[in-house]
Image (cartoon, rainbow, N blue to C red):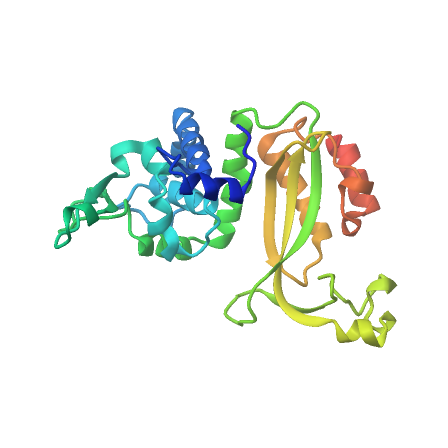
Length: 313
């Protein structure tokens, strides 16, 4: 399906009353996505291997994982937005009664012609501890606490080993085996509570200004105007191993590590490559070349030679 945005056309159609039914495009794709994951038992595989900090779960782990994915569908990261996102109907249509159903409560005290009613969710929940009607399949605070308690390093290892292994089981890697090494900065608010973050000086293009080579990035080589536009920003660094095809039609994360912004990406990438081959075997990663496919920070003669000689990539 192809969608073209035309706000004026849509508004005019609303004014003429031409709509019998309205459905968000994202809701359709979210429903299809979760149905496909359920049919292939992907959600259950993710739940079986997830490094949960709890021994007992009042809410099944697959619900936590599905809820987290649904929030990403809606472009939200704060857990208090979950009750609004779940009402979009994507998960409800995919999972049915397990997630709840929509109900309409008529408004009272108004003339019949003015009664519009409010649509809300009715959910049974997953345990017998509730003595009130639920409007979400699980509480937003449950999602937040579980995410906060989960060990960050264990979560990264889970993704690199188990999640990517599930990708491989479902034939996500093509026969050409082209992979990209990438390093990028993740900026966060200037708050020291972001453990392990770094405060670095960046230019107007968000490139770090360093006190060491290469020369073009040294603060001493900047003009007065360029230095005036530099700012200190708190950040992490995301180093990732990404699978793609020759045409660049898709990008699939095959390994990642979040580290302090000051850490150099070079040893991290080649450690990810080594871990990928140890966990998922030889012959999957066939090409990780220098030049356009690898950032200049990853150009390392001995490591590139090792990839070629030991792993054939």
